[in-house]
Length: 384
Image 1 (cartoon, rainbow, N blue to C red):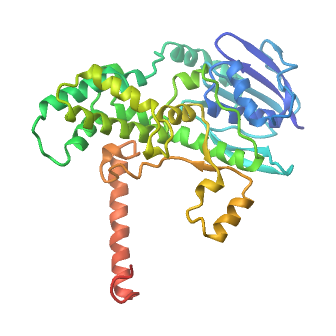
Image 2 (image 1 turned 30 degrees about the vertical axis):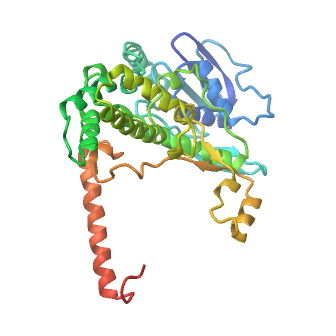
Image 3 (image 1 turned 30 degrees about the horizontal axis):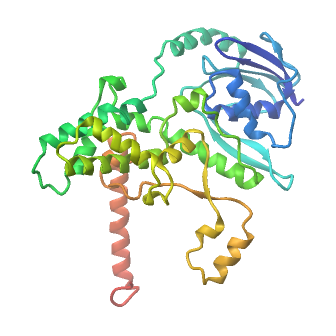
C-alpha cells in the first residue's frame, strides 16, 4: 500500500499518473518554491533528486484528470487554485511538514518545509471540485506586480529628495531614522494601499523557512539544492527575505546620506547613486555585491563561506582542525543586528501588538536577570 494516483493541474494543463507515495510527499514539499506551472513544479522537485539521478517521476504521466484512487489513495495538486486534495493511507498533507531526503551516507533525514498561507488543503476530490474553480478565478484576476519597481524605484528617491528639502538645516540626531521609518510605514496606492514594510514582511517567514530547509538539505546531502530559475514566477515576483531587507535598510540610509550631502541631488541623481551602490562590492557585506545577495535569496540559494574564511584566530589549533575536518558548507547571512531593534518600523514583527509584546517580555527578562544577578552576588565588582 505505497503507490497513489497523482493529479497535477495548472491554468493550462492537467496530467496524472501513478507514483510511490514518497513522490507525493516530495511534490508537497516542492510547493515551498511557489510554482505556478507544472513545469515549475518539476523544476522545484529537482531539489530532491540527486545530481547523478536521471529518474523522472513524471515520465509516465499522461494528459487528463484521473479521479480514481490507486493503492494507497489519491493526491491532487492544483497550482492555479492553490488547492491540495489528499486522501491517502500513505501520508497526510498540510502547510507544514517534513519530507525524508537521502543523505550522503545513504541514510534518511526528515527535512522540514513550510508552504504559503494561501494554500487550501481538503480531504476529498469532491471537496476539491467544489472550491477549485472559484479559487482559480480569484487568483487569475489578481495583478502580478514586482513591488521592487516601487521600493527600489523613483518613488523612493522622490520621497528622499522631498524629505531632504523639507528638513534642511535640521540637526536632529534621529533625522535619518525618522525619515526612513516614515517611508516604511506609510501606505501607498501603488502598493495596493499597503506600506513598504507590509510588502517586505509579507513572505519573510516563508522565505526564511525555505532557506533553512535548503541549508539542512545541503548539509546532509553534501549537494547544493537546485535554485529557482530566474524566469520562474516565484523569482520574478519574489517576496523579501532577511538578507534583502537588511540590504535595503543600508541602501536607504546611504541614499539619505548622499541626499543630505548634496542639496542639489534630485531623484534621478539619487537613483543613479543607488544603482551604483547596488552593483558594487560592499565592505559591510564582506565585500559581496548587494544585487548578488538579493538575487541569491530570490532564487532560494544559501550563500556560503569556506571553513578557512571563518577562522578568527590563525594561531588557534582547534580552529585549524575544525576547518580541516568540515566537509559541509558554512552559511553566510545577514541578521539585521545593525538596525534599530527597539523601533517597531525596523523589526520583523508583522504587527505593532506583536512587537510591543516582545518588548515587554524582553524588558521583564532583563529586570528578572538584573535582580537575580544582584541578589546572587556572583562577582565582586564588574565581572567584565
